[in-house]
Length: 172
Image (cartoon, rainbow, N blue to C red; front, top):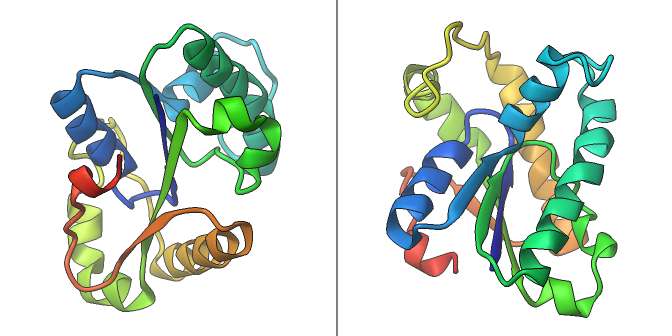
């Protein structure tokens, strides 16, 4: 099985992946780690600011990793911002049956009420050297966009509205 975890920055994708890894002992891949490895190694001229271009560039690699895992009957959790909303079109039914997808989305209400907590917990798993300079307005725009796109493409999503409580048993 392949588990894809999508969502905007700061929605808890890495934390959810960590919880699933601990429960199911699946291999885990962070698309951000792949991105930074490719950028730092000089294997791409793209930068961390080239989000649109990075999505297609990274997805071309990630979708083949997904296929290889399915073909070899291996389990993997893949998380990151760089999973396109039209991801299903890249796989035929044999592959789609082995893929579970979820997008984490914070409501505008949740962001307003918990923005200080969102900033506080931004490095809870990855322990980044530099904290992100997140902006509440951008975070709201990104999450609203993700909700719209998930609905348009009929992708499964978890809407974080009142409390941040994601039941991992309901995801698989």
